[in-house]
Length: 157
Image (tube, rainbow, N blue to C red; front, side, top):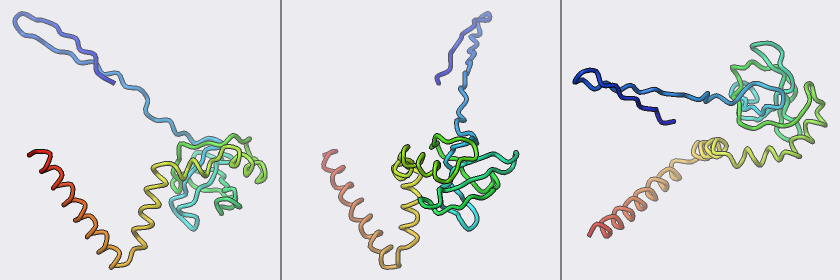
């Protein structure tokens, strides 16, 4: 948002007041049906859904197990990252209704299409590269930058 500007003249001195208006930028809340990414523990890197809120530090999550491989468990908020995705379920929903809600909302496809998932997949791919693969990537980057530099030089001339 752009600030609104007000000017006041005091004698010969011009004062400029800038008034900022901020909107609340936070939109991800822990709520029933929120899809989360587990970032620590044996299920790290897997998606789960908040089924119920236990207290201010923990919530009950489940995969569904057939889709994401996460069993129903109580997990600390420190071990999860909230995503923008939600599924339409009731509090303490059964596994069957949760699985149906995931399929109905096409949640897995939405996640795989997100930038966050693409970045994680890219990191995983890079971590699995061998030394020779990394060398090939380096050579390809050099060739690409050389081609770009030549085209820029042609455009300037």
